[in-house]
Length: 453
Image: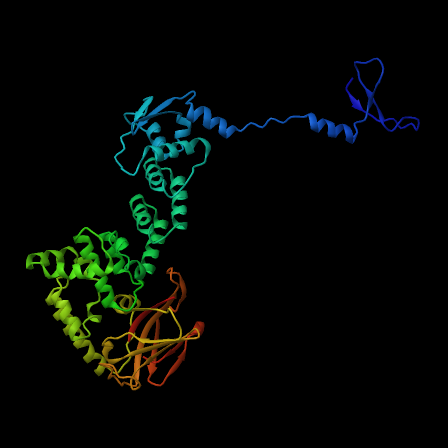
């Protein structure tokens, strides 16, 4: 007979008693019903033992090396580990499953030549395989990325990249960018390069940072269509001139001293030195829009004295500008400009709006179209300055001028607050166009403006 649980239906039975039928007993036994007081007492005396399996595995298997079936030797240290855990890495998984010389060896010697891989970083990456955790800080990130890259442990690389992206500063961005480029972290590389482009106008004023920009990075920056520039192309040229000086003369000084020493250096170069310098940095200087610099006798003279731009190129640019001037004066129809041509040829201009109201012009030839800008109460007005204020070369009184422009407003950290994208307007001298986002545009040449707060 089986057990069953029943309750007496008679009125004479106490509510605190129940009858239990037990096949092993001759007569039913009586059991007192458990009360809430008894449950409290039971909870007080009951002990629950919680086993931390992750800590146990980490301690016994990784630290103590218990029941190890593989030994790893690298960087002068030995790890007694387990193939089952190491197979989480593509490196070891391929090693153990492939037909390699060391595939069946119980001792694996790894020769590491990457200087970024340290014992601490390599140990932390191996350790993460045993308890799925890794302690990240900005000091050990380079070694962790290098170690994880060598072992093809993508999860650790992704976590490190996320930390770097969240911690970008002027002092760190170049180091993080080089790490991303070296170890194949495209998302981090893109964020770092974007930071460099949009903050170059600030970074270029810090010699210690400018000095550390690599040749390849500078060439890529100069070719970027959305590089933030303050003032104009001439200022960008002066920055490149200073950067080349810092690369050639390996020391960093204060800005005031750099200017003096830089002029001494360039004036002391022989013809052979100038030719060598010009060839070495041609991939960078070729992205300087010389046509926007040769707008006065002084700047043309300064360019001819410098060794960075050959005189033959300056002569050709002057001839091209003269031909464009004739075309602009004689062509009646309005010509559309493709986006790619805009990015290659637009005037790169910028201004720091440190106070309001503010009125300024970006001086230059501009084919006789003088641009006058005014900022007040959150509204930017751009107009052709034809009669109100005299300035050299402001002589173009054509009734219609086709303006191709892009206006970007950013904060001091390079974050976009507003981007008009590329716009084209056929403007008359007295025409007033209302721009969206509350920005008004009046009359005016191909220009790309950046305003920084």
